[in-house]
Image (cartoon, rainbow, N blue to C red):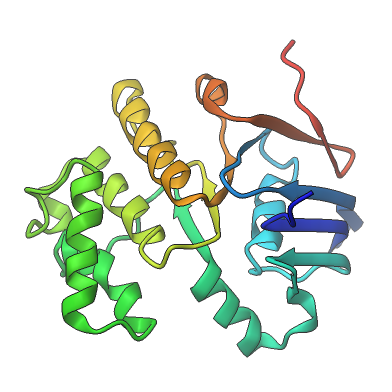
Amino acid sequence: MAEPVLELAGIDRVYRTEAGELHVLRGTNLRLNAGELVGLVGPSGSGKSTLLHTAGLLERPEAGKVMLDGIDCLALDDKGRTAIRRAKIGFVYQFHHLLPEFNASDNIAMPLMIAGVKKKAAREKAERLLEVMGLADRGHHQPGQMSGGEQQRVAIARALANDPRLVIADEPTGNLDPITTERVFAALIKMVRDEGAAVLVATHNFALTQHMDRVLTLKDGQLVDYQPE
């Protein structure tokens, strides 16, 4: 069996509150393979964001392992985990967080240049990604000159600019209308399938789950297959 892109093993995550300890994740396990699209559903407060943050190396669990391409990420120091995030993980959020003073092309090229790619090559790749997203004619537009769906497609292109091995999407279409949602999600699926990335998507939109390879939910701090009622 091929090595998974992402493996969470025995993850424990505890928040300490005035009311006592809140165990959000309890020995949670997950394997994501290249090219696999996995959905994460469930009510607010069930631990979805905590799981995403742990998988994305934004939170450190109390116990367990986070393996990315065979690398034991929790054995790394902060600098090492930051390097892994930049090189191997792409994030897509409900709100695009584009830089308003830069145009679409510059927003996509920026993470490439931060990673050391020369300006010309970064811009050329940004233009290619915009074309894939159906936005070839919008590269010189600033976010304020674009629709919400266009901005979110730019955000997806930015997340995939560094060819991440893992894409983590937290309600990526949560603020879009149904028609735009389908268009944006189709663009995300096409890009990650073409690139062979592993994708973990948290969503409240159950219509999107039909496009996913697996759909999971958190029950008592552990991941289980989602069973529609």
